[in-house]
Length: 175
Image 1: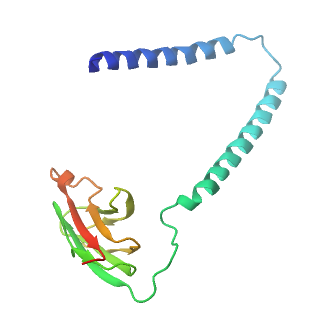
Image 2: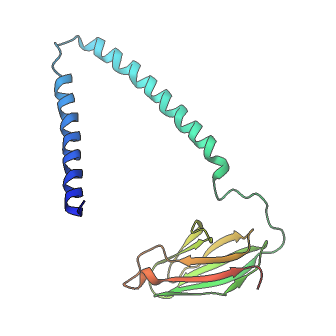
């Protein structure tokens, strides 16, 4: 199926869905006039039930996903932190190519030219930490790497025509 046909089909489904909602609203307003106090009472009763449902749902979703939160420290590294300077500039990062494993590392992130973002990705492509890189200001990003391997730093803020190419790899452990 051609892209134009897919787009037309999607547009028709969207139009039918919106038309159905509009028709349902029109038909639901065709009831005889009711006493306003009864409608008011039913509305508040429904509002309270929905509030309770949404609150319980969000609370259970929060509690059930908490173990998967990536920033909860499972083990805190001991000892002084290794301070690693990072300079972002169009369209590269100036930083060491190796950092140690199981040691607190504080990336001191700044920029030479425009605003950038310093995002660290693991080998699976998951974002594990990030901070802003701004000219004239240093942001500290504390990270303890628990797995050795290759990590990638990418800029997450549009910084010019070469933004998509702005990345740097570094190795953790096993120099």
